[in-house]
Length: 292
Image 1: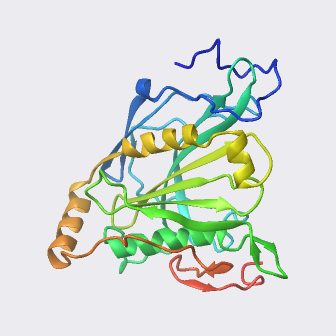
Image 2: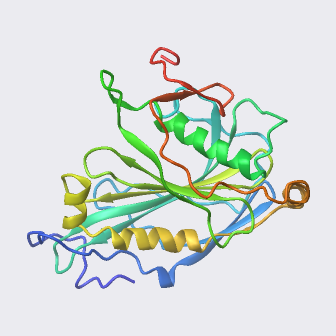
């Protein structure tokens, strides 16, 4: 539990020039379990503690999501191509506060969804590491690749992927990386992609907002990013996967036929702006009229 005397959302004093805020105590985080298309996922997350501004409600997880009927279309403003569908599974948010009534200093949230192609492709198996990698890059592009800040210079709102790596404790294919805004404090977002069947991918996204203004360097100096990152690292590090019999058979077959198949060790930031085709996987040259 947070020390409510020293660290509180109540603001009675001016904020310090710099501080290292305190958020939830991960050691008391509860283990959460869910079945997604027969695959069992477990992870730890603290109780919901939304920011004092708006108090965003949590999404409570069911025990089982068969996913047989497909997902919902992603909003056009987020994904103009409408090439992916999703099923929302879980959302929580956590506040971080400064010492001695200096108040709210930022927040981190965890959102879990299951994504699948809008137009099912029987030739694609997301249990294959290369298919997962292509899907992760394409999904990021579908959501962020058209966010042009200045059409005249093609200056982008976002950059990604950054800090690309696998999720070390998982024995199934996985990839995690960051995306960031290119202005106003960056607001980093961690993305984790894990296949749960040949047609479905679990996507965790962790968004962080530090309550300060300026460039990324200025914001980090005012509000230390380390406590936010530690919470994200702890949640990601707690993820466990037990594949369904069908998904395990797919993965065993892939390993047998392609013993060297694995997700790339590195990936450079993508060259945006770009579009994603209706197939959800093919990245196209940017055309502002394509999905207008």
